[in-house]
Image (tube, rainbow, N blue to C red):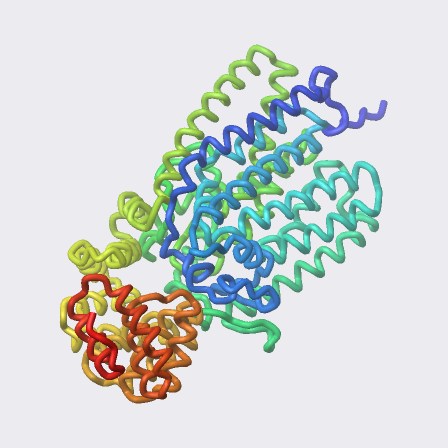
Amino acid sequence: MAPRPRRSPVTHAPAAARPSLVGVVLGAVVVAAATLFVYRNLYGHAFLDYDDATYVRENALVLGRQWAALVRAVVSHNFHPLTLWSLAANVTTPLAPAPFLVTNVVLHVIDALLAGALAWQLSGKRWLVATWVGLLFGVHPMHVESVAWIAERKDVLYALWFLGAAILYTAYLQRRRGTLLGAAFVSFVLACLSKGMAVSFPLVMIAIDVWMRRPVLERRAIVEKLPFFAVAALFGAIAVNVQAGGDLGGLLRVTGPGGPVVRTLPHSLLGRVTLPTYGYMMYVWKLFVPARLCALDPFPLPAEVGRLQYLIAPLFMLGTFALAVWDARRSRVLTFAVGWYFATVAFVLQWLPVGQAIMADRYTYLPYVGLAFAWGMGLAWLLERRRAWGIAVACASVAFAAFLVTRASAQVDTWRDGGTLWSRVIEVHPDASQAYVARGGFFLDRGQIEPARQDYERALALGNRTAPLYTGLGVIEAMQGRPDSALVMFDRSLERSPAVGRTHYDRALVLVALDRKDEALKELDAALALSPGLAPTILATRGTLRAQTGDYRAATTDLDRAIAAGIAAPQVFQARALARLELGDSIGARADIAEAVQRAGSNAQLLESIRTLEQRLGVAPR
């Protein structure tokens, strides 16, 4: 007798597991409520000096809502116009972080519900599996980075389209309607326009085929995926080009510092094997043990890659692959879980060491869907076939979910501002010199010179010689009245990163203090070209300096633009009054003097300076 074919777990759920409206609605409410509870304290958080300036605070295209220009913009070596559009839509006057964070949370809640909806489809409409997948997605601490970090809007946005495409593709396999496949393709393209990582979707389609027991090499299955792979290849080529500092032959516009992505020092052949597999292993570990979470997990030193935790990582990866192959002729739950996980995490594993971190919490945002699905299916199977065991595991899972809620809430608090963020990194990795530099910058922005200096000195002791370190030291030297020393530090910074507009601006201020105004004007020109997002501040400074050097017409132009952009310092109105007076515009000069006096308050030195202009105009003393 021929063996009976195995039934698909998708289409043959027991009657007890059939969906009920109450179960589906209750599950969705639980997922949304728990997710919103985790992020309840997020909305008062500040912008971070961790790409938030690059993406929003100093991005002239985003701040100006230049929709057409954003279509071609490359920001931080990424091409993702939909993400930039969504950020521009959140811009307010005055600029505030709350709208960006609210939008991130709303998108994350929708993503959690979509993850649950996909699990509902794939599990044969088991509402318990859907609820578990959605809940794990919504409240896991590893996902906090993607939500609490404004610059990571791309994660929560691309996941929306990615999961939508997966839902539509699954529906297509179940109903065989071409419009569903077309809609999945459109959603996939939107995901690619939100984040380049979406290129993994065609591989996810294959994982879904395997789960649905559709022959992967079937001619129709191959042909219908060709457009998806073509789009993935296109966006992959764009990503490679812009990561290398390119602009796709002039079709795109690179904003901010150019040049290729910063790469780490080369590792040995052993490191090239262990580093990516270590990330693969640790992401799975942190699904169950979300400990020591922070914003930066630095690369190990080359001499450390031979330690046990790195050596067992390749074996772990091979073990999961073997498990997936073993299960391919059985339930296929593990096959699908490993397939989804690997497809969505493969491109962010450090096959070629890039950047500063061996891992990042945000890289688990979509990969955990496959692992959560296997967990949910295992729980459902136990409840259906081994009820006593199922109840015990269900209770343990609920307790684990409660733990995740508590842990994620605490993780949200670490993203409150740069001080809490980098202090947490230092707590987890005491020798992470980058974290000391970043926290030093946070202290410096708040005028806390001594804590900043201590952090910078610690970074120096740890061997850090980066541009941000020297920039920070230069600012300290300037604030403490040592312009010559400050100039040395800024020069060292620009030797390492010559395309940072803010450093050119800081250097210009030092040159002004040294009465080297012509050089300062050149530095301000460079700062404006490199950092258009800082234009109002740069224009105010350049306009004031031009007024002092006698270039009154150019000064008026700069100051007009600065004031129109919201710069309202009394010195700016004073400088424009001087320029207008020299150009014969006495009426305009009088108006600016009145504005300067009103804004000067009780600043006696400034009022005395303004009074000199009043005397030239014949204005009665105040």
